[in-house]
Amino acid sequence: MRPSLKIHEFLDQYQNKLKLEFTSGQVGLEREIMLSRQAADSFEAADYFNVIRTSSVVVVGFQESRYIGRLDPQAQTTLFKTLFRGPVCVIICSHENSLPAAMVALCEAQQIAVLTSALSDSELLDNTRYLLTRELAEKTAEHGVYLDVFSLGVFITGKAAVGKSELALALISRGHRLIADDMTSFARSAPDLVEGSSPQVLTDFMEVRGLGVVNVRAMFGANALKRDMPLSLIINMVELDHDNRVEFDRLGNNLKTRNILGLEFPEITLPVAPGRNLAVLVEAAARNHLLQASGYNAANDLIARQNQAIIDDENASN
Figure 1: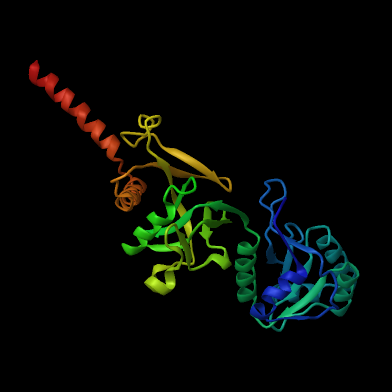
Figure 2: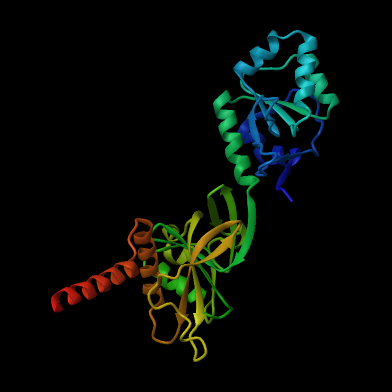
């Protein structure tokens, strides 16, 4: 099911930001703005007037207004009837631009609201696209703690009581920033980008066993928090025991990934045992991820050195 936003919800949230007023009657308020990522019927949530690739929100700017105004009434009607075949559900005219009264009436008959904005062409389209892209992004909620570690979005997961919040608290005390505790909201805000944030009601708070609920902002200051961040790395905390102690990667070159909202992200399994400094290990994992992103792989480097040492020994013995 594609994410959608009803017109009345759109107006409730963004009418003031986009400086919108009705030109038509208040019709079609239950119609839905949609953003399609399907290859067969791809369309933007908002775009300029285009009868070939129609958007849900159609922006009429200076050029579009002048073009429509130069057409005779019959051509205007034909143009708009073609537009109505697409997913259009609202038309917004930018500052000092308008539609002919007959076309406004035609839109009303199709239950398509016509609005006017005080913003210029580019301001209106850019702001509307930005707001709708975030609003209509695919979303999911995942159990875990989300932090900014060395400017990387690091998502820490694991079973209940494994120590996720305690680890997060240790990282915050080392200067890293909390984004979400317990439950993290993820949204695919771009084709290659998943952003994580905290549900509004949980923002600022952490639950730490033995301490209860703590307010990170009050304890560490506003700089210990971050609103949202693109996901880069997943750390899966697993208790180390006799049964699984041989399962963990020794070299670190067997990359595991986890799928979130259709994108694959590297996942590191971190064994949890008494005496292990997990905060340092997470920092090391983040630094190592940055090195790998720049093209350096420590495991491959070690293997190359060992191979070279074998070759050197063979040459020396000949």
